[in-house]
Length: 419
Figure (cartoon, helix red, strand yellow):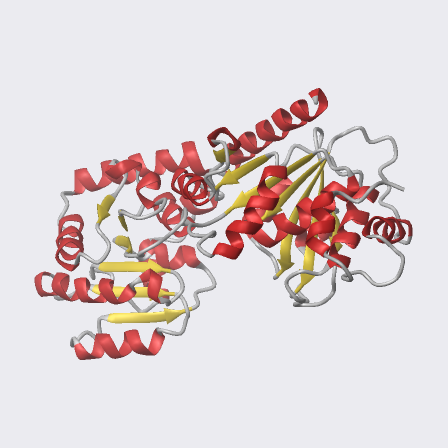
């Protein structure tokens, strides 16, 4: 029987596992008790993507996994928890899919989840384990040591993920055993390095995020039709944003700045697509400012391309963002964009070459920038929109990210074979 790695023993602690079984034995039993995936003589490396939970379809993950070069890699999808009864499109497309627990939630550290996950990794003969987020990285790293997986990658999707001392201690134990850390952008990469100074800079790379640019750029619905769907006048100036209605998005600042724009352009309308706990507070604010008829809180919008098509300007006044897809989607749709000088937003806007950058909390600056973009000459506006769309095609299309991911997979497998 293989020796259980010290990291796993330390994490489980004394008395955490009852009876005489080790986690290694439990993993073997779990693996042997399952129906094996029919790999046959498949010599492709197996890449397993690991998430904290299945919450339902997520289009960009599905596009990346199904877009992976299946002649070079065999994809496997694994979820620690099962939190949705909606069918999984990845499983429907034939990807080997595993749910480690059918529970929607479990206590933070569960040693039997490690055992079951290790069993799946062994059975699927996983070569690369690509973990999405912190909890998946912790469980995945421990299980990968048990299962003998040669490459473990950790994907970090946002800022400030190591503010607490407990999280930093866990990172200190786990991250040295990860082969490479993928940050969604350069701002996130710098945040990871600042919070975890023991990491060598070359171990953390900026892998970016992606969308299906053509899905947005080639949307056939006209602006007039999109505005009819939201009962917006064809001649109105429409400023808008999308996202959860939460304090960090700071839609309250946008409403305040929009009020100043409306003094100059009385027909202007502000549309806010998204749901959240601040909806009532934002509606009250608009009413206090005399903007009740001009601010439209749309709630959840099933087809975000419709609301983007209706806009003249897209604005993100967020106080913190990693690399927001909503901004990239608006650029792909050809909407002039304004975003805060925080996180990955300046990176997306090319330092101001592909949109306007505002300082968070600067009411006068936001209002002044809105007026500038609305009053921009048609030729300048068209040039800005064209440059932004070309930038998005070059940097943020799924094909670009897939090429980068596959290069990382190749590099890490080559290193593992050389060890």
